[in-house]
Structure formats: structure tokens, C-alpha cells
Length: 175
Image (cartoon, rainbow, N blue to C red; front, side, top):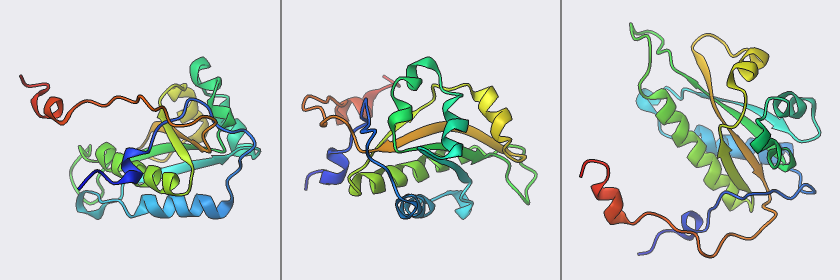
């Protein structure tokens, strides 16, 4: 059985169609997919700051983009700031080793749902983390991790996209 086409055809676009918008219903569906991700102890230690293009939240996020991401990210229909809750409530743990991993699971669910909706996601970390954190002021124990640009790709999926082989996945980095 081959890899599911939804997985094999997913890609991170270099540019987004600036004419495409996402509806509030689209956003709800993306977040609904994200909430179904597995997490350690069902803690669901993730949160998302959602900024649709042409809404005040979008400009609030865009002003913190690095020069490299500012060239393409503002054209996405949606920018999402991802956050992980690293403090584990009702324990003596000061830090969760699983929160970032669990957030990644949630982002993967959101990404595949977007692809099923004929949208694409590009995850990135090219922004001023300190300034964005000061601006959004997440609560105690919450940490901004990355952003996701979501929209309709402005280009086709590259035909020559290369991936590491399964053999390479099994041998690196311990050989």
C-alpha cells in the first residue's frame, strides 16, 4: 500500500494567492482538526492566535515578521501563531518535555486538514519572538513556538521534491 495521497501531495508553498480568503468556518474546521491530535495524558498543551488577512490581528502579527518571511507571509489568507503550554498543572514538574511535541502533532493535524480543503501551510520561525511575545502576552507557562501561514498556493507543487529515504531515517544520526 502506498503512502496516502494526502500525505504525498502536501507541500509548503513559497508564495500564496493574495486573492484567496478563508472564512471563519474554514478557521473553525482547521482548529477542530488540530484539537483532535493526540497528546501526553490528553493534556492538549497547545493554543493558536489566529490572524486572518485584512483583520486587525493580521497587522498585529505581520509587524513582527523577519525580512525573509515578510516577503511572502502577508499574502497568506491566515497567519497562525502557535503556542505550547510547558507547565504541567497539578504536578511538581516545572517543565513538560512533551508540550512542544504535542503542539507539533496538533499542527500536523491542522496541516493535513488544510490540504484536504485545497489549502496549504508553511510553517516558519522567521519573526521577532521577543517582540511578538511582548505584544501577545501569553499567560504563565505559555510559550510562542512558531507560525503557520495558511492559504491557497500561488504555484503548483514542485515535481522534483526530494525526501530522505527510509534507509536514511533508520541510520542517522547514530551511525
